[in-house]
Image (cartoon, rainbow over all chains, first blue to last red; front, side):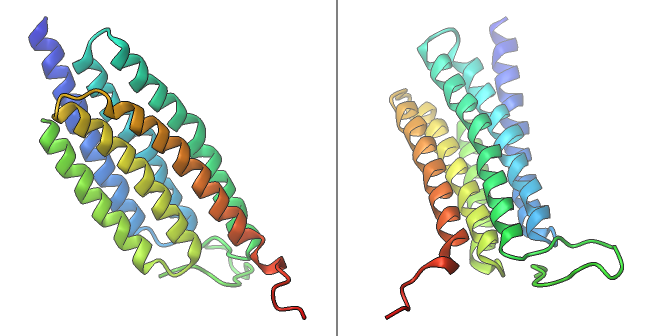
Length: 112
Length: 89
């Protein structure tokens, strides 16, 4: 049983690390500022969740697990709020998303 | 394993920082700094496990709170920066 917990914890940490690298590649390579928010969302939810989950399994049933749970719950509540505020500010500043619609209003595009 | 996770988080921090440097708009940079804050929370937690000192989790929780407030403040500042009356007589 101990081996299973260790194996599960290693898997969570490994997959979580993979997902945050995938999220960072998304932030670099996606073409538009609104698309890059997807990559940031992957880091905040999947990446943080799996890494903190792996650490929770390592800690067992102690106060440390509750603290890690609090960190994750806080990240779950605040990262969508911050992303929404940023997206609203971006739209209000006049940056328009990259679309395929012809004759779409294309003031200040944020393509690299 | 914690060393591998820390290395992955550091690589991710470098990648995200490159977006903060080369983002054409200011909103790319705010997004990258927000992700950098979340990654530093993860790095502090993993480092606490790496050195077997669970007190680091308190620091991670406080920094998550502070970085959220900071991102909201910077976003508000950028949003309302065209309404400032600094240039008036």
